[in-house]
Length: 174
Image 1 (tube, one colour):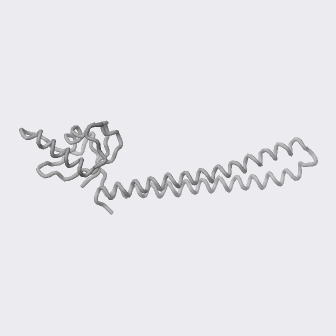
Image 2: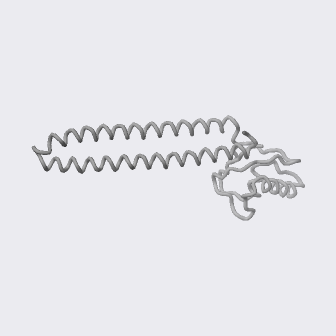
Image 3: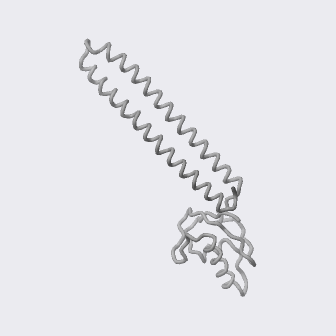
């Protein structure tokens, strides 16, 4: 069983003709059989609406039909590709977390330096002191933004990981 990512908006009949070799005098019956199997293995599909580009589908084995050549609009996901996607997700998660940590560390150092400069300038230059106080508030707010961004990134990556696991399960892979 393979996974197919819809490349062009297609209805189920068009998709069946894309995925399977449907030929000969019995073509209408074969197409109907392919559509029925696609619906059975992908119950979320609607027979009347076009399938949007990017939707993953399980491509079933259909008795009496062979798969069409996997060129052009048809793109199957194999185990190797799914593993690469999982690795890319892990790498993206690590990179994002490292970047956020570096930015937070840099801002903390800037805040330390700013605090030291504020003390030195407080009496000598009150107007500069006020500007530094405003800058310190901005840096503190930005640090909170980094924390929020990290939470959003984690949630997005968890959702991508969940989606990838579902693709693997749909394809009969665990």
